[in-house]
Image (cartoon, rainbow, N blue to C red; front, side, top):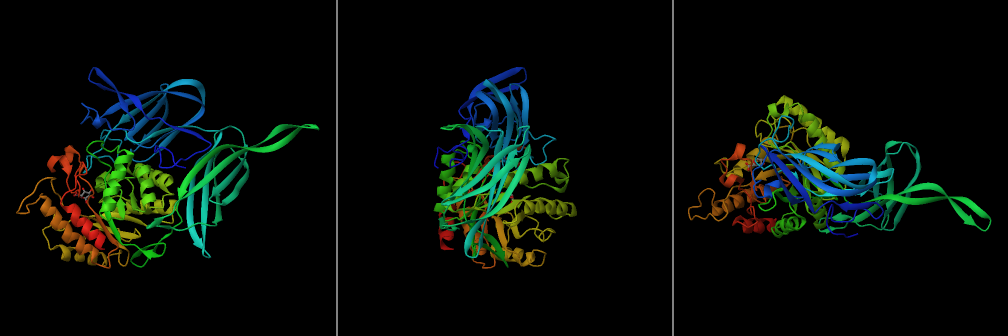
Amino acid sequence: MRGCVVERTFKRHEVRKSYELGGLWQFSVTRGEKEETRQVAVPSCWETYPGFEDYRGIAKYETKVNLSGNVRIAFKGVSHQAKVYLDKNLVGEHNNGYTPFDVIIKGVKPGEHTLSVEVDNSFNEESALYIPNDHKVYGGITRPVILEKIPNTYIKWVHFTPFKEDHKWHGKVEIALCNISEVTQTIKVEVELGKNHYVFYEGEIQKGEVKLKKDLVFEGVEAYELENPMLYFLKVNLGFVGDINQSTMQGTIKKQCTEYIDDLIERIGFREISIKGNEILFNDKPLKIKGFNRHEDHALFGSAIPYEAMVYDLNLIEDMGANAIRTSHYPNDERFLDLCDEKGILIWEEAHARGLSEAQMKHKNFKEQSLACIKEMIENHYNHPSIFMWGILNECASHTEYGHMCYMEQLEKIQKLDVTRPTTFASCHYNEDICLGLPDVVSMNIYPGWYHNVPIKAYCDKVREWVQTTHGEGKPYIVSEIGAGAIYGYHTMSKAKWSEEKQRDLLKEQLEAVLSNEEIVGVFIWQFSDCKVAEEEFATRPKCQNNKGVVDEYRRPKLAYEIVKEIYHKY
Ligand code: ADA
């Protein structure tokens, strides 16, 4: 099932025709009276085009494409507001560059058509989640675009929920089908995994969307373990059941047959996540998290990190002995999640939000845009076995009553969409947070020795002890951010602030303080690599970067790299 890595690290179809709309597109921007046009690669960030390093506004991407019949065009990430046109007709819109969306166009006239995407990366009054932040917001079609031909009834998504019963692995299989024709179709759905083959459904499907659900037993499969990440392809085939005229010796007879018209291949792992007291269990074994926070940000590529550079990051992360990554602070590229599935690296995936005040959470579009991001994140990423927890609203107003209402609403939304994974949010409101009773796991961002000149171990213990005096008492507890800054290449004997020596020494003390505490599930270092930040708000940061990376923006290791490696391999 291997194919060249485009949308995912595995082939998603054998029946449906699916292509990447990559290569060079025409990029154009009108600045003042002048229209500037050039050929650019998709996916990419326009900040990597000379002359557009700091462009914030609207741009247009355009390409010619041969189409006919029903087509589905899937955009894996357009940052951050998109309007999609086919031959100048608006066929789709989407908010948020961190979640996928698709446009379905029925009955396209065969021939060459013009597909164009108007992209806006500005901070504007319509966008509640995109504010000048401590990570840069890029512009462009930053993740792959996939073109597919679809039949009148096609498979929209497949969700697989593994569970163990009577020492056997079962799976709840949910299949969403869409009949975009005007007539009822007679179909047959088959499910295949390894030597397991089931007829899942036979019958009629009305116009519109239908969800089919069934629990199935799967023989001959092994558990997905972090040290042995066994992955299986779950193939769903959709057949159109109709009559064909078959000529025989006795003349022509009508014969019912199934012609496969669509399919979808998902990749899954048999594992269960649970909570027992203050522990998170992975297949009944307690987890000890040794993680990194990682932004999708790279000096050469912006947020459109190519597959090979993702692999490079994970090589370093594994080399340092880390076993978990927090997708701070938004849903990640599916190819990165695929790689973590394959490597057995745990993922805390987070819906998009960072540091919103109560007033910003009262934005007219905050609720709609936040809940949409959660829905799209879970609907698209549900099957990744590496995702062990969902997070929301990093360092937002969880110390206010209004914030409490928002956190509760969003955590309830997650629990409706996925009852199998714990929830959390990273709080910075030590001594003030009033929401710790809401999530399954309590997570605190703390920076002893960097932002607060305090004894590090004592501070780490004090924060955790305070959590035990709140509604977060007895819950699994994670230090979701801890770290220190260093400018790559800045060395001093005096271990001055911003030197690599200072960062190394602070991280050593911070990691020992956290990982030596048996009561703490684990830690996510802030952060894996340096990343660009918004000049509008964070110009005080040296190099206009968040410099707390253990490697710099080009992935060059700082002195802290070796100390993290020593400590992560020790625990
Ligand atoms: C916060 C925030 C991070 C980053 C960090 C820092 O904890 O969650 O995104 O901004 O502070 O470097 O100060």
